[in-house]
Image (cartoon, rainbow, N blue to C red; front, side, top):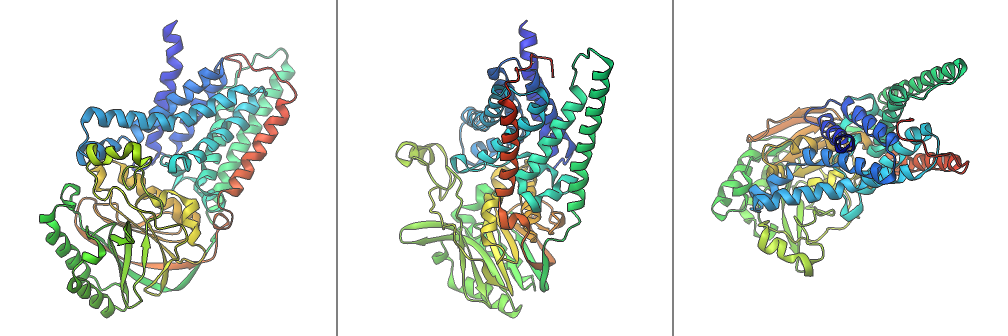
Length: 516
């Protein structure tokens, strides 16, 4: 008896864990479709709403424990948290994120509609709503939204410029629902006519599944934006400074020398340093050092973007500022990391940064949402710092004005885990959504150049010092996602939920476990 009760939860947990292999660096993009199809099938067989919630929670725990296990590295290896506490923090964080799939499971089970409506409308819509909510609740953590797994090789990636990452998630979830309906539907037939009707219905659902993927592939051939100006030579610097050495006073001169040497070896018009490449306040960066960089890029006829901290009116900012042929400008990080860059409920939780975690500059101020692109090297560059590239609805604020996207980050916090490739995949999605090239300059990797099709055009080896030099192109124009944001995706979901609600009003009985 206990085994029969436990087995669906174990299956859900394993399905969630296997879905991780759909994301970078593994890129088996069909696995999340199959994993969600399994979850939807389990939901359709759940006898009670609480059981469906438990299945959603188990799936989420599998997905997040295995998908973001690299958080343990940041907390223990570099935050110096006790291993047990770090493991508990990871489990708690996974549980918080898994609560939303649990809520989706509970809500779909509460609705009394035909089994097919559950699996084809309610489940995909509520799953996507749960992902969308995860992107903004408690400042947001959209990592591992299933839409990212489709970038760049899946036909479903074609929906990204139209509907954004959550629209891709919706198409994936609808595919999972259709697949589950086709493969697992098992209803006893009383007559031969019912059997023929069921067969025709399966064929119709299979055709709809193929149509979703064919349309996605066709959308991928549309050029939503147009090149602007001549190609630009850029150099992205990767200093490979170990995280446990980055803020050591004795290592500072070596860090400055590394980035000076890398910059002076480049003749590119635009040179980009990683996030806080210079681990100093901007005012404390030696003037002669800045003069060397400024004079060098002026000889190149361009500019350099430098990652450093800034202080103004008593506030500290994680910033990128420019030197060179253009006037000096800066971008200050807007979307801060809770506990890593600011302290929520400071009066209650301030001790966590001060006594448990050892995170330098752990209480920063936000630079604000309304920051214009930087006019450098003949382009309008929209800079985003660290995991700001996880929020497509924020990236598009600088568009259509911006012609290039630049992400600067320091993923050395996560060691040699798969966090870096997952992070690069977020930037690939942003390039697809916006129709802009994305340039990523990172401390230890992944430093890359990403085309408007979301594909990586060039990449440096990780955990090695290097300079990635490439010809890039600015773009102008707007994709539908730039114009609409998440609105189009939300309209589709509302339509699906309204259709399910209208059918619910017909007072269909809830199917018994195993009926569909």
